[in-house]
Image (cartoon, rainbow, N blue to C red):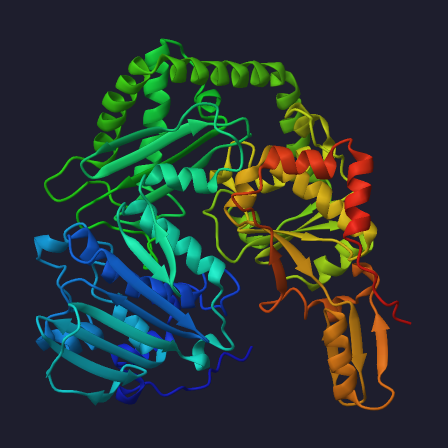
Length: 616
């Protein structure tokens, strides 16, 4: 046996210390999460904007500057606040020296968002052009950079502009590729800022965002079902909460720490949910199940914590156990507040407490009605996962079934054996799972949750996703509906979306459900192949291909070979996010599209029919 090894040199030259800006540029994910091109709300270009905005919000929270102006044009971003302005002698330091900031020892910023002195420096390092100008007491200081290297630094000059800071940057296309800012994602971000900071005005490209009622406005903006009773609004020092119930299934929460939207929750949200259940049980002196109390709940919590500890640089999950070095635990702080304020509110508002009790009793009655069905369905799902090939799981979960949700994981929901086979052979088996449907799913509109357990397809799908007890157990970050782009495929998409909207609406509201876009055409000549997702792309490819190109029309996923399919479900796969707006009242929407109003729907289809040219 040959036991020899190639000798590889390892000496002083192999040890490298990177400049801070080079480290950020080489490892941007450590600072801003994923990169992306602006297609998704959590792509890096929005994190850059947020890092700059957080500094302006901190100024507002300290009582300086009631207006922030945000301008985004053709990929460039400008943020102008009217706070105190960065101290002029420190403009270079705060924008280009790591671990520099006013938030380490200053009580002025003890409950701010950014505490590590990194944020704006990361924006600078990841921008091809970055400008910061501070106006302070009749003087201003301006510095310009390219990739965090100073290109021009002006001396302090007199100014007649109001105090505050202007930050202007252009994300580097070498890192973010062909990025594009989408107004809808920016607007959602800005809405959360004003909901959490009543009285603040943000002007985005001259469009005004303002909130008078704080988290009440946030719930009204996001609810897609009518509340069963007026929103309970409770405020205290360093805490604000809102609570109501609707007739939807599932639970819906929004949580924030120091103005940061903690999309993955954390210690504050866990304490909030537990406290609500405990207080309601004590108020009604009934030993309700927590699941019955929280069924259909829609709530939000915002707290302010000294020197918060998050579980990642992008601050999506609070890890802090304490409110501050000398404060109570987060759990005790939240629990004591809810115990006192929610109990008092329910005593003072009997109409609200009666409506809440009615909802809890209805949820309890429905749960008890399906106890036997649920137990049998769980056993069936467990056996199916072990012994059939309906779910082809990814290795990440096979090796660690109870592991945390990983951002890269996804599951494709496919129709038919051929499509399922193509995707299974083409996927990344470490991170991508496949769930195979057998025929068209049931139209679940108007049915009770009992059907989720009685219907084998729905029962096994729910078990595969692990969402029976809520989204905390969700095993895949992206749930991707992968059906043919024909009438049957569209119908299956609609039936699956109806199922999710009916029983797991938060799966859609929290941005986990997608539609896989696969090419409609393949155009190729002897030198190159083009995959086209639209008629416009087909025409452009034909023009580029020249004379007599070969054109193939894909009529089903099963027709695409596994070798080709790898091109469509890799890192550049095209996904359409299934989204909901405030206007999308789930009950009304499902009643129109999936109810028994056949003639009304037929008229709608005819009025909106688009006739496409048949491609031969």
